[in-house]
Image 1 (cartoon, helix red, strand yellow):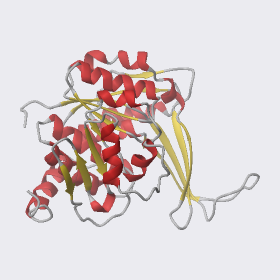
Image 2 (cartoon, rainbow, N blue to C red):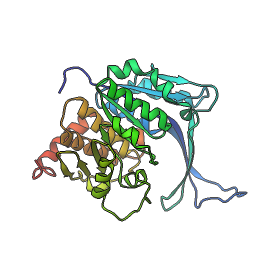
Image 3 (cartoon, rainbow, N blue to C red):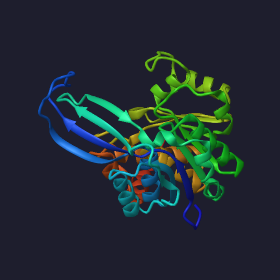
Length: 318
């Protein structure tokens, strides 16, 4: 591993999540009493910036906020977590992103998202981060920003020799041209299918569909499989990385934790199998606590669980 902290730049999103429990989902015109209101920071890019900082990276986020009070939730979080905010800017045209989440007694949810200022990000916005990207070991982006912004992030990362990671969430069909600049594509099983224009529950195997994405130009595909671990497909590898068993409390944020662990391991010079293992460990830790930010792992936690898994879960998987 490198002596200096690795530099990771994330081009992504911030949104505030407003959550409440209700006995059922209301219909239009209905007012009902709910419980357990909570408000907190979210957005996949933001979560990944916090997680990579916790894991030891010099983490920088390119994001767009509104000029409202909700933007302060983001800036307070980044100050507390050590995320570089030089590239976090505000715009007056749109509000800070927000999501309304209603949970019923069965744990099912109903979500309405307004990505707000995140939708103002375009290729020119990403160009303002080029100097930081040029210094980065890894550049990562998500699909909570417009496709043009995600594409430009990958292009600039490739131009300057950084490893590029596209976490295609929330998934949508993409032009094949973006894949030419993506070193690592990290969908989950439903995102893998949506990327290919298929129903999220298409019965074909994830291995078969990942191979199809590689034929479209992706160099390396890592499919996260939840309780089953992760699948790696490259020119040389077709490998399953078993999951690390933990007592699951809340899976929200596990994907962000996985991608963050994967990114920092790559930035530190680990090979793809080691990096995926570290990502699996980080995703597992995120499942053990309620809430996304509280669940994102600290480095000592991740290193300890990785060492344990190497002696147990992965002992027979060199």
